[in-house]
Image 1: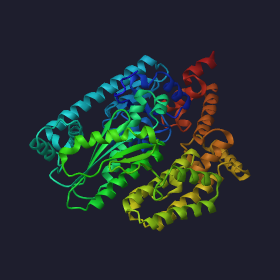
Image 2: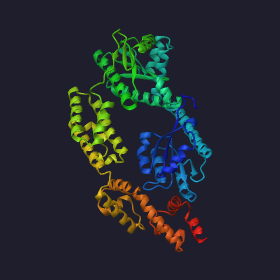
Image 3: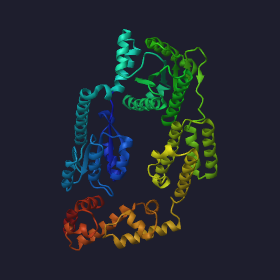
Image 4: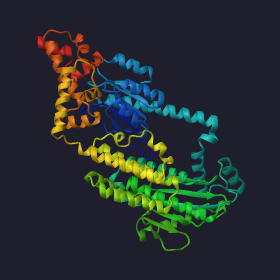
Length: 553
């Protein structure tokens, strides 16, 4: 078992062969060796879209894939994500492609039909070593170049750790360290918040130490973003440090130029936002211990100790509580009616799945009416709306519907800040209506089966030409995504799989009739001889030459 403080190295697997992906995933115990599979993609285009979302450190990609191949993905990563380590999966006859990949920083390659657990682990370890080396170089360079600017967040965390522990001695020492990090400690208001995750026994049973530490790291990163984004005043600071294994502490501060009431509201908004985000994204609750405001920075250690003692009383009061230093009764955190919570998401998903658009419209009207009446701060409202769109997007993917067909405007997340409340509601409802329409098309009726027959007929007549899903869809005048769903449901194969199957049947006939394998690829519309060989091997278990030899025998 890895040390629980060690961060797992994130790996993405890109391959259009589900069987091989399953084999690769089961080949080693990833987490025990310090790795975690953070994402999987079926082709290069899907992988490109997932890179920013999942932030992999290592990408293992097949070379030959339909649509966008592995070489294009490797070149894209070299340009946009140069720190990602690329490992190629190749066939016997694809070394020329691998050599091209090397020019774009490809670290290594594995032969798919010779891959072993030891070979995979050795390649992954080499990639991690390169990641560690680069990270060390970056840290060293940054420290020399501009340590105060680049390392500010970590320096502030270290400062807060020392402060909470009472390790900063004189007032002059305190002022000097705080000033070097842009923290004003000469006046203003300060509040300490200590939070502790509930039900840790449950998470101890559910996760390994390494898995929990990774999850807890994601949680504290999210909390830090919430605290940062909630502030909208110059010099307003929220210093946060995670404290293994289930606690984090935040020191809020604000210059005295602003009202105490504003500061009090800011702290409470942060608590409500953190509480809502924990439940929405992780289905986790926490208890919070909040100090009174104070204006002497040297009081921090004593205030912190009191908040820890106060937090200990959760044993008598239960979960999801706020404890305040003023002696008032602990508050049960009630659901903030202006938030978008777990129950809202469940209800919307249920109505969408069942196609109850009238009920959904009524519910959405109620939600937006609530937010209008509360006059929610615009930035917070935009975050809620983005979460609404994410619910629709996730549900669409589960139903094998491309979210881009439901939300046709490119860059909608970037343009949210320009939308009015009514425009947000209208945009979301239009996406919901499109989802219900697309879902109704999932099971092929008589007209759907007729489309499949037309598509198969077109493929059989044109398989010797380079044809794609879009080409087939255009030929029979239908939406490509709709054709893809109907075709797969109707005959159990994708359009690309059916095209390749038709071509391989033809290839076998041509070989049986005496054609040379090297001359067949172009005649059958394959982009390259190596891709033809890969597809042929996948379909028959043999290379074209092996098939010819067995036929001759």
